[in-house]
Length: 140
Image (cartoon, rainbow, N blue to C red; front, top):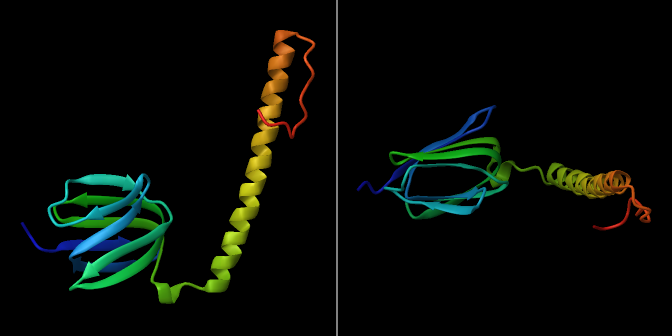
């Protein structure tokens, strides 16, 4: 069994990394995936998070967001929408992005409530009952 695996991290803009490493941990859709030499082949969607790897006994980290990871024949290919080294991250831009996501997620909750209200209204109309119609902020 080989003692290294080839790690490749690619984004639409660039090839960030192509190195032999001892171990890789990626933020998979179902949780963190630890990958060592001889790992079973797999494909997983990535979530936003930290990709960490150990190279010659030293730990390194990258921020990744979106995309996929494929493990095959001691080769780990990470195809990410975004991948950055810690020193490349612009803190102000990251805060702005976080705030925008929080604002949009709040809108998403309101939108879900409105859709549930509309669905309940249709059910009430369909059954023809004289039930009190709940308002758009009602929780079902």
